[in-house]
Image (tube, rainbow, N blue to C red; front, side, top):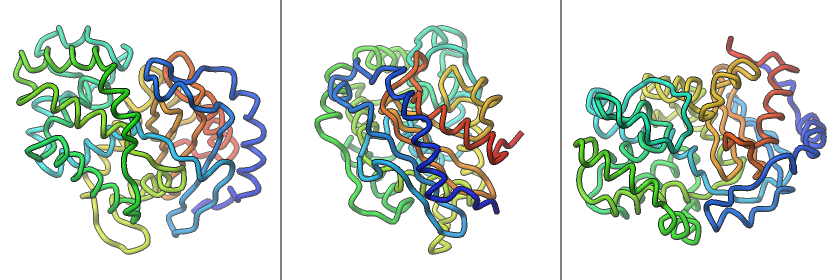
Length: 309
């Protein structure tokens, strides 16, 4: 196992990418995220032997946003099985923006994959629970298991901000309800989804989730199986093909590590035989990916030959 990336190395590379912090813009279409500080940069690595290294503003907490799609997919698959989930959500990547409604108009009127908004909304709809709070409670309990940290919760201000401004996501849900992809109340599904996206972590907690996925769904420290191995593989495969929105192809070429980004500016990466990497930098490029996160992962991948390809 490669363990050349020490804390001093991380500090050095984080300093090298600091100038990129103002090359993008923080997410301003979600009011509560628009106040993020572009200079709050952090990175953490959780190795498969349990060791961890970190650099930057590692105590800063941020919301998972679209990174939560990987976690909700794992839980929905565990709740329902592969056939049920993939009868309603596809497995194919898309070159369209993550919030696009265009592909839903194509036969068979189901989302192309679980990493775009339509697919993620459908996945959240499948999580077992009679109320939004039950669904979110189960999702939080799952994350507590993944991180061995029961302090993790969701940011109520961000959740409310997203819920009140989620007009496009409502449209996606109503369209899917018309075509029997989702069931039940649109507003309740959206409530659960916005709270899911507003779950808060720091880079150290997120890197541990990446390490667990890299370890085939088994907790490194306790040896406990939390996600079935074949489901962890499915999640990592989606991270490769769809994890970086419609920049997933170029990311695979430049970086080559299974990863998922969120519009909070966070990126989760998971690499077999290595561990988990988490990067936070709130400034986003035009695709919705962290400018600093992309640059740092590209540097680390090229410098230490981390690409899976």
